[in-house]
Image 1 (cartoon, rainbow over the protein chains, first blue to last red):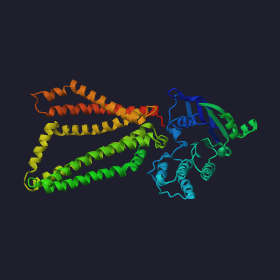
Image 2: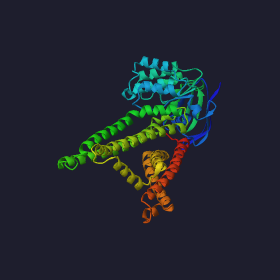
Image 3: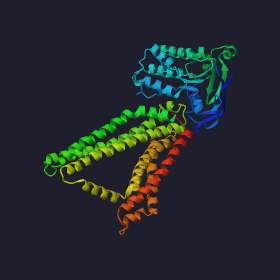
Image 4: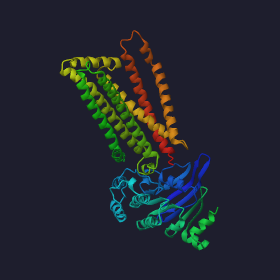
Amino acid sequence: MNKLVDIKGLTKNYDSLTALNNINLELESGHIVGLLGPNGSGKTTLIKILCGLLRPTAGFVQVDGHNIGVETKSVISYLPDQTYLNGNMTIRDIFALFVDFYKDFDLMRAYNMLNILRIDPNAKLKTLSKGNKEKVQLILVMSRRAKLYILDEPIAGVDPAARDFILNTIISNYDPSATILISTHLISDVESVLDDVIFLQYGNIALHASVDEIRSREGKSVDALFREVYRC
Amino acid sequence: MLGKIMKHEFRATWRYFLAIDLITLVIGVIAGIVGYNVAGGIDDIPPALGILLILCLAGYVFVMVSAAVLTTILNVVHYYRSLYTAEGYLTFTLPASTIEILSAKMIVALFWQIIMTICLSASVSFLIGSFFLYGSLHHAYGLQDFYEFCDVFEQALGFYGFFGIIRYFLSVFMQIVLNLMMFFFAISIGQLWQKHKVLGSVVSFFGCRFALGIITFFVNLITGSFGMLFNEVADDPGRYFSHSTIVSLVISILVSVGMYVGCVLITDRKLNLD
């Protein structure tokens, strides 16, 4: 398997607070990885550093053999945990933008998914419900043929039906040679699709193992193990 | 990538700026028509109408100033929103370098700022030109008067000859660049604050303005600009303006380049989206 993500000695400090503490992590291609941890454990910080939205204090980060930069951004498809598109843009405009910037963006696939949801491509983003905005953003992300998909809380704040759609979209559009990194609190909802999990705690990696390994070694689900590890 | 980002910048902004520019031009044309019609009977205007015309003129000035300020505000707000709010998550994950992203946004902002300056100039020219047009057509005063007016204006401001005019326009252009760069640089400095980044930007902006004022003052002092202003044996008052224009041109080029480099370096090395 190819080493897609290579992180060595990654540290991120915010003044006196250490968000990530000397993290070492390797991710291979072809896995769906859950990035799990309570609030403030460093999940979003790690994701932002991988996406080039945050500069590390120290350490070495490579994606697909490149330091974080233009090359890595062209192979990472990122879904942030908030609406990040200009609400005045129509969906058609947003698709045009993605076609312009990402060679791997599959326009047909995007329109097909939009059609299934019966969302008008001429609608402005700000006129859509929160759930539909999330779906449009997910369509954008999953219509790319990226090497690394990074999804930050993709199912938070949406109803169970929307959650099902989101997870189905992720699974059905998943290229087996790519890796998906999903950050979430809702472990029970995503556990069935995960290959590996990473538990983050106080900026450190508390656990990095495959889901099968956890089940056979611990004799419990990832959700149950998470509740045990992070019991207040 | 620079061209693609610029294309989408234009797409995102053209409606607002074009509307402001068109309003500026249309109001200028209306002011010109009114000016042409009152130019002949300016001594016979009833007091009530005179007051109304003065109010209209004040309104015109207010609209022109507002259009210029609004253009700057829209440029700065768009720059800030597209880079440092949630929209920055898209902007900074595009496969483009920091230089390309910032440069594209700055070039488009500068374009709209220059278009606004041209529209403002055209609008004011319509108003002033209407009086000269009336005077020329009705032989109240001819083109010769206009040229004399221009000569007095040129002498007072000290832009002699072709290169003087070029220098003056370059100076105006660089002032526009400098003003924008100062806003953008202040926004970048504000991003270095862990909290209250907007406040940080505002404080940085006034700090930069103050520092620039001090620098300009001392450079003018050292190079003898003020001496020219108070020199009674000077050839004409234009020497001071001519000299200070060169000083401000050099300063604005150096400071603008410095601020551009600062923006790129800060964003490249210290990007910290909330």
